[in-house]
Every structure is written in structure tokens, then in C-alpha cells.
Length: 353
Image 1 (tube, rainbow, N blue to C red):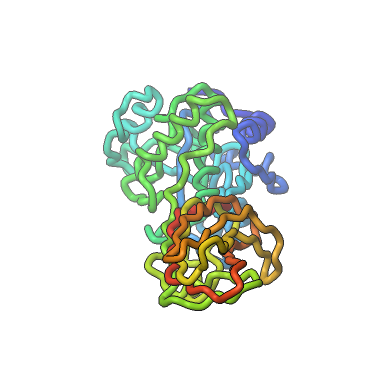
Image 2 (cartoon, helix red, strand yellow):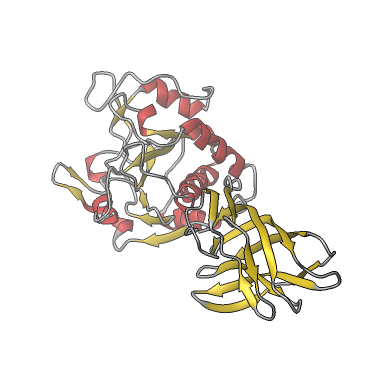
């Protein structure tokens, strides 16, 4: 239970958590306070917008529509992770809900989930949620299939944490609309218990320190479908013509690029070369490109000839900036052609935004 934050305090709290904030023109006086009280406030409610591409989603949340005037929330969090502030005060987002849920949020007295809701807007026992909850409308189709990009989800957690920290609330002051009204299903696509765990983790750290867990990496396993000749005297990119796994979806069969930025990756390339005379060398290195232009060569690893088959495992570990791509290149320094019998790349790739 608390007095609502002023507009200035809300902006400061959001920025302290590291949120990218856009103040929509007129948001500080955009509210529904003339329709009823705003406060005391008890928590933060999460919604999805049920909008697709081509919708002016921020304008919709600010202005509302013919059946429901705006603002429709305190703010709209778009897929790029920007928090667009759309209302300062009472907003048409929560509607009626269950008194038992409100009491559980006020006392932060529930377990993993609040008690089941048995009320909705207009039902006999409903209480007014618009007076008691801040609301974040989060851009998503709400079909359970539309993804929640990491940047957006991080912003949703941070924006919720900003309000909770400013009021001295814990993570159980954050609920989904579906936990308030038995008519609602939002937000779809993630579980509110997990969301609250992330809010708790962020609140346990100083403001602005939480960045979420490292996302699961994607697996890439590429190779050459058959042996080929490597002529002496020139750097040559390995063409990955065999593709066993390519979860990043960014390698074209028969292409030499195995990772594109922005990303981090870590793995190895295992090389088997025949016909390399004893004492002769084949060099291997990662090379960074921008389009088709070579930008940076990375340290060289050498494969020494043994008179028989020659083998080496080359580490591939790097962070790539946006617009950059990585290839593996070989240089045959022997006086005769050699045979690349196999080249197998195995790597984990963490895509960045």
C-alpha cells in the first residue's frame, strides 16, 4: 500500500534500473483520475497488447479506442525493449478483479501463485484494479506463439523492479492480468512464477545491476562433405558443405561463414590434412569480414607436416560486432598441393541484441 509515484520519481526509478525510457508527449497529464481514485497503489500488473505488426501500439495504449478510452496502461513496452510512458495516474488496464488476490498481493502472503481468481470486471464481488495497480502493456500478439525477445523481457522485469524498489515492495507485488481476472489470459508465452523469480533476483541486487541469465546458446556443427585440394601460396576460406546442425539458421550450405554478429561463440575446428611434407606447414586462422571485405585476421595456428596424416584442433572463440561475420581460412606453405581430408567445426553461439 503506497501513495503513487510522481511522474519524475517514476522516470528516475526506471532509469536507475537501466531501462530505455521514452516519454510520450502528454503522458504526464494523461489519466482517468476523473473517473475514480488513483491509489493507494499495491502492485504492478503485466499485460500483452494483442497487436501485430503494422499497429501503432504505443498510440493505441496512449489514446485507447472507441470502446475503451486511454490511457490503457502506465506504459507500453515494445519488442525492442523501450519503455514508452503513456499514462500518469489511473489507467484502463486492470478492470475488476478478486479481493482475495488483492489481499494476497498487499500482504505478499501467497506461495508460487496468488489464490485463484473468481471475479472479473462487472462481477458482483469485483474490486477496482485500475485504482490499485500500475500497468505495463507489453507488445505481443498474445497467441502463445509470438516470441518475447530478450530485450523486451529484460525491460519488462526491470520496469517492474523499478516500481517495486521505489515503493519497497517485494516480487509478489507483481501479477499477471490472468491472475487478477478470470476472464483474462494475459500475459501468454511465459509463466508469471518465473517472471517473479526474475524480479526477486533483480531486487536482490543494487539498482541497474541485473541483466538476466545468459540465454541458452545455439549449436552449430558444420564440415566439408568431401576432401579437396589446397593449392600452395594463398589464403583460402574453408567452404562448409556439410551441415549437421545449424540452430542459428545463419549458415548457407556451401558457404564459408559460420557465425554472424552481434554474437559470441566458442568452439573448435578439427582439421585433417594429407600430403603435407614433413617439416612443411599449413596455417589456419579466423578471419573477420564485413560483407565480402576482409576486416581483421586473428592469430595463426600451424599444422606441421609429419610425412603421414597431419591433424590439429584450432580454437574458435570470439565476440562479433553487428555487421561482422567469421570464416576459417587456410594457407598452404608447402611447395605442393595438399589434401584437406576433413574440417569439422563445432561451436556454441550466443546471439546478442
